[in-house]
Every structure is written in C-alpha cells, then in structure tokens.
Length: 120
Length: 113
View 1 (tube, each protein chain N blue to C red):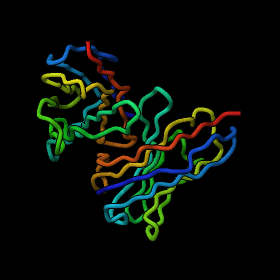
View 2: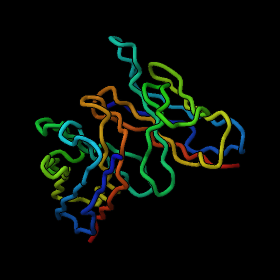
View 3: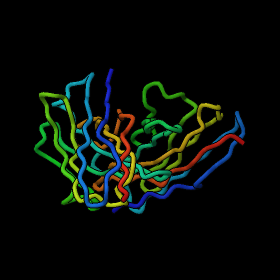
View 4: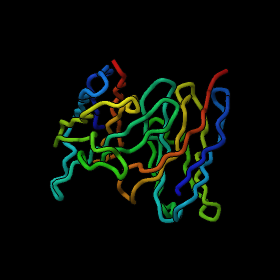
C-alpha cells in the first residue's frame, strides 16, 4: 500500500525558514517523480514544485522559485522541501504527492498534508 | 499560464439527482500527436487530501463509482455525477497536466439540497 506522510509544518515568522519532509513507502521511491502541492486555508490547489525520480530534474512555480528547494533522499525514501524567506502568502497545507509516471503530472497518491503558518 | 475556470463555484443537488460541474481552460489541453486531453478531476472531501477520480478527461480511476463520468475536449470539460449520493459531498477540482505550470481550477463545492 502506498503511503506518504508529511512532517515539519510549523508556525514561523516572515523571513524564516522551514524544512518539510515526506516519508514514502509502498512503491519504488527512486523510480517515481514527486511533487509538493499547497492549499492556502479555504482556498484552491497550487502546484509548488516537482522532482524527477533520479532527482536530476526539478521544477518550481514562479511564486517560490529562488526561495524553495526540492530534494529527495533515495536511501531514506524521503522527499524534502526547504523553504526559505517565507512570506505570509506561503501559509498553507503542503501536500506531497506521487506522479503517475515521469513527465505525466497526474497525482495518483497524496499524503494528508502538513500545515505551514507564516505569521509574526 | 493556462487558466482553469470552473462553474459554478458551488452547487446544491438533491440526493439521487444529477450534478454537473464545468471546467474551461484558457487554451486547448488536447495534445494533437496522441489525441488525448490532458485534463483530470479530483475530489476533496472535508479534512482530506484530494483524490484523483478522472484522468484523460473521461477515464475513471479504479474503484471510482460509475455514476461519475467526465467528458469534453479541447477547452471545455464536464464532470457529471449521475445520481448524487451523500458521500459525494466534496469540493471538485479540474487540473490540466498539458504543460507547466500545471494548474487547477478554483474548485466547485458540491452539497446536498
């Protein structure tokens, strides 16, 4: 059974940093592209970043490029999102999700999310 | 960026009745080389992550009841729930996976009348 479990969400001040993690199990982690999607409170879904199975290819939304870094540790079956220079508008639930296949942005499994709140 | 616009924003339907949700993309998501529409529908129940229910505009995911159907091509798409059940109360999102940035509609909240 595929499982994705996010952690690391917290209350952080504007300008601060946070590192999210997503522990994956039930599939061959090194073979699958992964993504972070966020949802501001009461709002819709926003694709934040994704990474290829090997980790060599990454993509960032304009809203986070230069501030967020996605990475993965294949030995630990874990996906990460390093978030720097956080802003109030980054406040959201952050979901990690698995792409159905490389290059096909269909999200067939999702974690339950972790809440990031940016506020002073 | 491809903008996805759903209508209506909210919808109340009686149990057993038909629910129709529309999704319009600002440019075509039909890939001519394979004649496939890169359009998905997700269902998000309260307090849960989204769940993929339809891909390629009309292909139901495994385990999704056949009362859910998707249709459309190019820029105009529809999700229909033929006979609404209580467990279908949710917010529904369309998503284009044709090109980056991959974008979602704003969501349609479906409730029981």
